[in-house]
Amino acid sequence: MALSEKPSGANVQVGDELPGRELKPDNVQLFLYNAALWNAHRIHFDHPYATEVEGYPGLVIAGPMLGDWLNQCVEEWLADAGRLTSIEYSNRAASYIGETLYSGGTVTAVDPASGEVQIEVFIKNEAGEVITPGVATAVMAR
Image (cartoon, rainbow, N blue to C red; front, side, top):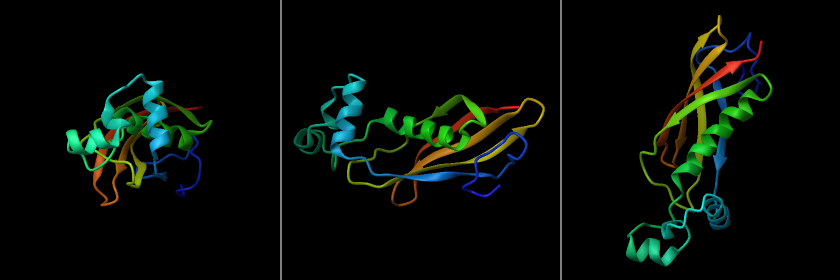
C-alpha cells in the first residue's frame, strides 16, 4: 500500500507506513490546549517563568498534546476503514515551542482473522530523535 493511500481491511500489511504529519505548535495553540485541560502549569504559558525559574529553553509542549497528535495520526490514516481501539505512549524528552515535530507510524502486526492491526507510532523532534514512542491498536472494518 502506498504511503498516501487509505487502508482497507484487505490490504493492510506489516511494514505499511502511516502518512507523516509536520507539527509546528505555537503559543496560542499550546495555551488553548492547556486551558481546555485546566492545566495551569506555568511552563506551558509563561515564557519568563519557564526559562528563568524552571530553566527550560522555552515554553514546554504538554505531554498529552503529543499523545493527541499520535491519535490524530492514526485516525486520519484509518478514516472510515477502521477504528482505533487503544493507544499507549510515553513522553521520553521535552519539546518546546519553536521546534518542528513529526508524527508517523508503521504497521507492525496484522491479524486477518480478527481484523486487528498494531501500529508503532512516534513523535520525532527536528534531530530525528523519537521523543514520544507508542503502540496503537486498531480494528479494521469488514
